[in-house]
Image (cartoon, rainbow, N blue to C red):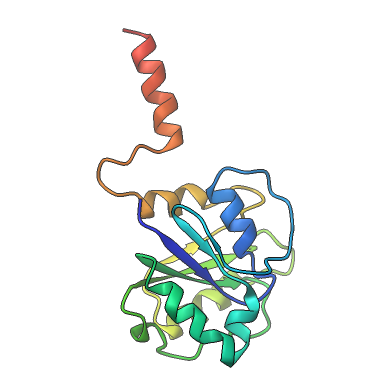
Length: 160
């Protein structure tokens, strides 16, 4: 599976998405430092919000195959400047979070991510599980077997 680094403002949903992608129970906790898991790098929002810490994001992007720029559908503004994605020498995808929130405006968030340069955009609600399998499928490499495929494969083996 391709490794992804998740970047975005504080409280945009990076840790919640990390938990959902790993199949864990969703529970809020503030990310205090970079969590480098097998296929996910979860970064603190302060790294994207503070110029002097932003250099660390550039360094961690080299450890990933894909950069995921997260933008909450309830954000009043975008943290990302126009045409920023060419600065990464990795594939950059946009991820619109909190699409289930009553004040969500996913179309506005998508527009801002496209202005930043993201060509591929995912819409997710980690709490509802919406869009999680789409991201996992996107990160899947040839030969990877996803957890839900193992269940189907196991049932097929039991029938023979």
